Amino acid sequence: MPSDVVRVIYRKYDGSAHRDYPARRLAEDDLGVWLGVPAGTESVYHGRPSVEQIPFVLLVPHHAWWTGMFNPPPRTSEVYCDITTPARWEGDDTVHLFDLDLDVVRRRATGAVELRDEDEFAEHRERFGYPDDLVAEAEAASRWLLGALGDGTEPFATSYRKWLALVL
Image (cartoon, rainbow, N blue to C red; front, side, top):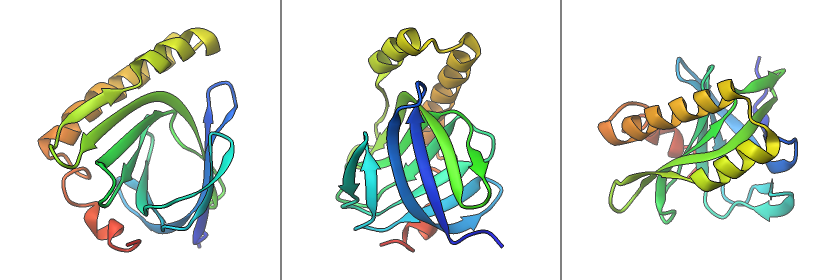
């Protein structure tokens, strides 16, 4: 039986802390593992203690180079996808990811989809020595997400809403 609480650990490629927080396992389906993070959850962000002010749902896909964060109002990003290495699970209760800087975001008010942090990706590619195959996977995931967030591909259209309702 999978654990109800999952520790989500994001690091940068050099191993430095990025994000670390507990989440409640909501479900697992063909898309991946759905995790809920209610408001008030204590977390670590860029190595500093933090408290989540707005709840969200995180989808950790099976074998993909991204994670998807689904947000309610008042957050301005309806969907925020981090480009990451594929998830590495440690048992059922801890998931490890390396954040690869690039983000694909869909804005709530306009539906605009944008690629963010290309400058950080370029800087870290050089500083951390991203291998060419990692760069190719990250760029391919970004291109796919740019289309998927804009064209109604699930889980980005409506299917995430049932999971988000569980943490509101």
